[in-house]
Image 1 (tube, helix red, strand yellow):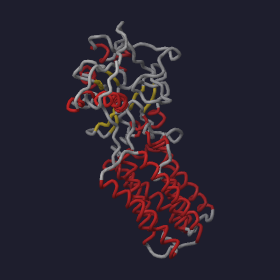
Image 2 (tube, helix red, strand yellow; image 1 turned 180 degrees about the horizontal axis):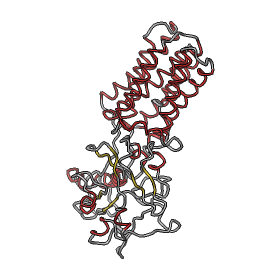
Image 3 (cartoon, helix red, strand yellow; image 1 turned 45 degrees about the vertical axis):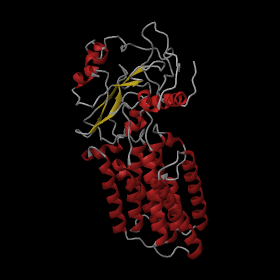
Image 4 (tube, rainbow, N blue to C red; image 1 turned 120 degrees about the vertical axis):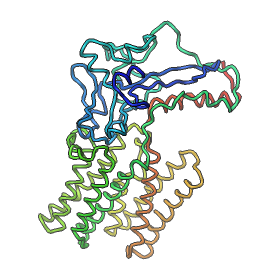
Amino acid sequence: MVGCAIENGTAPGHNFREVLVFNPSIITGIPHINLSIACNHCQSPPCVAGCPAGAVEKDPGTGIVELDGDLCLGCAYCSWVCPFGAPVYDTAKGVMTKCDLCSDRISEGLKPACASVCPTGALRAEILDPETAEQHIPFFPDSEALPASSIGKTGKMPPAQIQFIDTYPEEVLAEFTPGGKGRVTEVSLWKEWPLLVFTLLVSVLGSVFASFFLTGRQVDPVVFGTVGMAGILISLKHLGKTFRSFRIIVNFAGSWLSRESVFFALFLLSALFSLSGTLHPYSGIAGMVSIFLTAVSADMIYVRSVSRRSRSLHSAQVSITLILFVCAATGFTGGVVLVSLIKMFLYLRRKTAAAAGSGWQVLLSVLRLVPGLLLPVFLILLNGYDGFIVPLLFLLGELLDRSEFYREFNPVTPAILMEESFNPLIRENVSGRSCL
């Protein structure tokens, strides 16, 4: 890590390489494992395919995955799709950074800095045969992105055997967790609130336009366009380099973030044409298609990430919320009831599978389900769609659900998997169950 920091001139705490240590105190009977990890320069890097600005490329000659900071938007999406937690956000520069395997040194025939200073030879730079390289590495998330680097034994020492000799008191349990949590690609509501607002506006604007196109309800194009542009400007707050936002459409062929941006721009343009009577109804059809493509693209951004939540349907997914809002805006009661039941099922399934939350989390769940979902459906069945109470309640419920989505969404990294792999064994030992 020191050699890497000196070579790349990184600030303290901003490391391209991290060392995860399990059992740092080397307590007898508990395996002691060191895992030095950086970018694995994957055979098929998801960061290359996912970067909307085309700032990440894999050198066809060397296989090195490099990130061009002069092209980076600072959206951090590469860190969401990386199963190894390699890209790191530089708060001072507002861009992502990562290990480039010391490409300058490689071009001069030298070893990477980390390998050249490693005193035990645990780090090496060599060409691997993909056919014989190990495909599964402990603590690495299952991913289609096979690492082009390898981790294995460099000496004759046999693998460590897990062996418990005595039970340990709770006060020393903290010693059994990895030394240093490692880099965690944290996705929090505090940081992602612009995306929360934008994704909600996608559903709101889509339903408002659907009410115009399908039922003939009058919509002021000036107000509609102003809200749409405000949504775009708010979403740009998510970027580290907002003045490079025009590059967000560069990788339309590979990035769902690029597709989301293009489809929303097409929706806004088509909707404004339709609202003003230009090229109607063709512009209206284009608007309806593009808003649904926007919602699907927004969901796929998270589906393609390495978060456990991303692989299953979520009650706060943008496409499902858009369908609910469109049904409510067009007076399709059967659709409102059906989608609401689907949302309730998905929400309850997620909550019953999770660990018991605190008191305020239970309160938020009650607010999300009762006034945010059940009550507006009941009011629709009782009095129809008159007034603003029903849409406001639906909006409250979706705001709470989407907030929980970002709170629960965190990409899985080797540091997390290391801790999760060993903690059950430690707990078993602490509870009095010994095994030799």
